[in-house]
Image 1: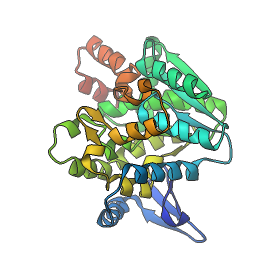
Image 2: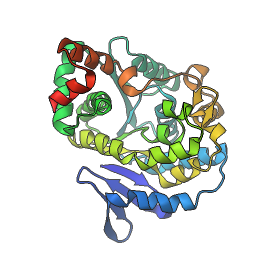
Image 3: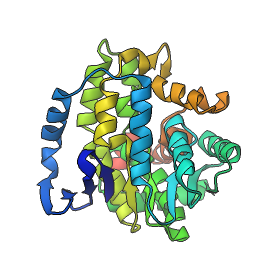
Image 4: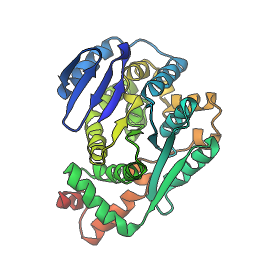
Length: 304
């Protein structure tokens, strides 16, 4: 399940049964298929926005989502999850960051740097290569998906989620949505229309939400997605393209916001790989595929 704050103090929830609930004084249900309709309505109301507008929207979204109990933050050391952890710290100390990866994982090292700099509680786990086949089977048993990216990202989500589960927390923050909104993917470097690519990505983000929700749900966890807050989406889509992509710097506006909060340059300008690469899981999956004489795609399909 994910909790999704939006305007009018309503809260959206999404769980693995694939429906939305809108909670206020009354309760009613909306089919997840209405996601595109909701975005279409939101899109019609987008107005030009500044860096400060977006910063305020993100700060407010995180503040609305912070639970009244101990919770977790999935921390990769990237700019988005680092900002989430920092903003949570402005509200409370009652949370723990979680990070996983293979030996030598750059994401693990970056998460440790962020946690040390901001005095965050961090729990990490170095996954041995021998553990990966079993972890892959567990991810496949939940997702039943032949998608290579889903498997790599899923290994990270499940392994980190297990740390949170063992810690007894129910809610974990995720940075999902920032890449879609703020030009975090390589496809943005190849397009002539950054905004159109962002809309395409955010319209399709439900697939990734379902993946993360399914894995978290298998552990009894609820996922909090501040970048999927309606106000955050609307404000992000009002930003000019050069606040999303500046030269080779993706998610440029987040880096400027991090500078506003006096983040060290090592965090602000770090070039982070996708979770499956930065954690090291993709390398192991590729090796297992090669051992079986298969392409990565064929190997993953053979597991489903």
